[in-house]
Amino acid sequence: MIAKEKENFAIELNNVSVSYGSNRALSNTSISIPYKTFSGVIGMNGAGKSTLFKVIMGLVKPDSGKVLVCGDQPGTAQKHGHVAYVPQTELVDWDFPVSVYDVVMMGRIGLQNIFKTRSQEDRELVDEALNKVKMYQFKDRQIGELSGGQKKRVFVARALAQGADILILDEPFAGLDAISERSLTDLLVALKNEGKTIILATHELTSLSDHCDHVALVKHTVLAYGPTKEVFTKELVSQAFDGIMHNIKFER
Amino acid sequence: MEIFQFILEPLQYPFMLKAVLVSAVVGATCAILSCFLILKGWSLLGDAISHAVLPGVVIAYLIGIPFSVGAFFFALLAVLMIGLIKNNTKIKEDAIMGIVFTTLFALGLIMISRVTSTVDLTHVLFGYVLGISDLAAWYTIGVLTLVSIIILAFRRSFLIFCFDPTHAQSVGMPIRFIHYAFLVLLAITITGSLQTVGIILVIAMLITPGSTAFLLTKKFSTMLKIAVVVSVVSSVVGAYISYYKDISTGGAIVFIQGCIFLAVFLYQTMMSNKKKTEPLLS
Image 1 (tube, rainbow over the protein chains, first blue to last red):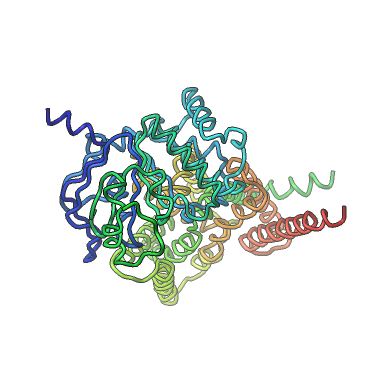
Image 2 (cartoon, rainbow over the protein chains, first blue to last red):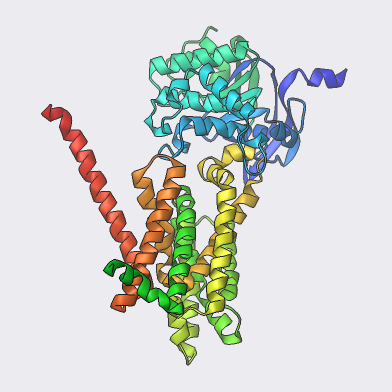
């Protein structure tokens, strides 16, 4: 019974603490993110959002506490490719001589043999993912020759080719114009409706409540997590941002 | 027919045949590595390793073991020292590399100044492929060919290691192992190339061909091919020029590579300026 209950959550952190040297990034952090939800993770710079993501992806081992991803240890979840990461735009070398197709194919790399030979199935899944994000026609382009919104969609396609159930996006709207942001949001909502769990870090507090059904407030721990209407309140958000907020409309 | 004579005549001499073969293999291996190295942004690390091996070479000379063995040992020592200091201080990696490689290089210079017969050792500093021994030649060709095969066989893993190590790690690839495997292959290549171009110039072999190719293409597989062709041509032509004109082989090879890079750069700049002005004219 307990085991079954656990499987209802895509991500489960229980009392997790992480330190880098003497710097404590996360203290006694607990959060349970249900499957098929769209969660916005908000907090100031250096509040521990990236560390939270790294713990979920199994890149950082917590000093204490328990982490379950799709009911598995992070290491096991890694091997199954459960979690995919869409990096911040500034962290990608856009001059790198790889095509859109090459990047999406990298989603398959965890499942390929040591020589990373591409199977027929790999090719089919990559084509499918490219079609899904409407980037198939650009598949031979070098990644630097894309618009900001297209660049994001390539990495979403990589996550789909990986077969990930959980998509983590770090500041996906940074530098996007309103139209690109809209179309990326529509794509993510559509993926959520198909059963994916979407988790994104953002500064864009204004449009957050439109598409996120859940919100996590982070300040060296998860201050609050739950349905947007309950958590995205002036009182709680101002706690996460030390009271510094500009003209954000709250429903409550 | 004169051109055939020009090409074939030097090859009657075993030393020249060896020199051309070794230079070509060194050129090809360095070119393959250079494509990864410049994309990873590790050019300075190559420079650091190549300088840091000098004490190892002197020690190898003194106790009579192959140069590359001593060099390889110090290459690993340099990499470990850089990693150790980086993980325990706030100093940025480029500064640490600068400190480590200059200190080890200085140690090498001190050791050389105390060794009476310095002829062989200056060959290590500046390269002397025309005087390479049979054993060293076969060792270099064998080891570097193996390095090339390994890198090409695992090129997709190395490429993703350069492009997006976070993703690679998040799907469970052994990224630390790949990291150290790449460093070891780099160290082997540098130590294997010493006799051809020398400690001071080997870094050019590890940066220039990849950079030239990067200017010319946006496809990695094409980049590899261009880099290898440019590098092997430079190496062979350099060996011939050094034979006919009696000049430093390493110097000739690296200078030709630099000239090719410059020519490609000027061509590219001219073409892009042309493109910019065209719409205005039409």
